[in-house]
Image 1 (tube, rainbow, N blue to C red):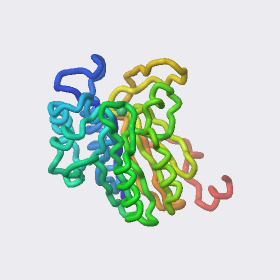
Image 2 (cartoon, protein in one colour; image 1 turned 180 degrees about the horizontal axis):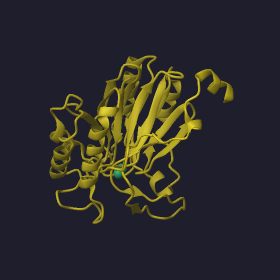
Image 3 (cartoon, rainbow, N blue to C red; image 1 turned 90 degrees about the vertical axis):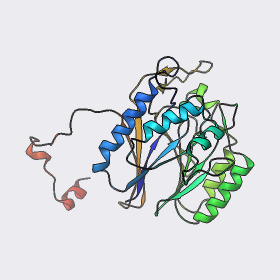
Length: 288
Ligand SMILES: [Fe+2]
Ligand SMILES: [Fe+2]
């Protein structure tokens, strides 16, 4: 079954530097890439990585070159939308030969996975931390949704419209996102929005649209529900999110957040008690 892996907020800085003086974002991206490469033999149908913004911390050519060098180790193709820490011209110059990169303007794209499509939406408003979907972006979205027709859709953007519950981050979410969500509400098939920016794994529901924020590959943002407090970074395990289409019990998209790094195992359940042995299906269903 087709699928993809989302990574987000890699915040790559110059080689040898730490983001915010504390976060080794290059090491974190190396770890994420190694985790993906190590998982691929046991994953089915995953054919690309989608990066939902903040590829770099300052949007410089040097940082994009550093990002590209680390991503060259990845055994899958990747494509990306920019975040508030990116700069469109430098990002385009770094990755211009990529088939998903538009020749000019915002970095939107559409990728058809068969049972569903992903629309990458550029929400970067240069000079601001919050995101915005421009009139041009709404036009791109309308055309893409019309082309998709009745296919389930995933919107991949850096800025979420959903609030995370962290007021300091929610102030800089996608402003004017109602125009996007009203279109997803009207879409004649399941719709989901996947984002980054908050550096935490958050899931919510807005109307009939499932909204997800993936953890960053690098530092996290402290869960802090108090109003009037600046955001603070914490060093927590990074994560990747595996999305895979499932046909059972009904067609739909599954997501699995996997921490990056190497951990002990896997181990067989060889010495499990006899009562753990699988029961015949009909008996299991009767007992539920
Ligand atoms: Fe970020
Ligand atoms: Fe961001």
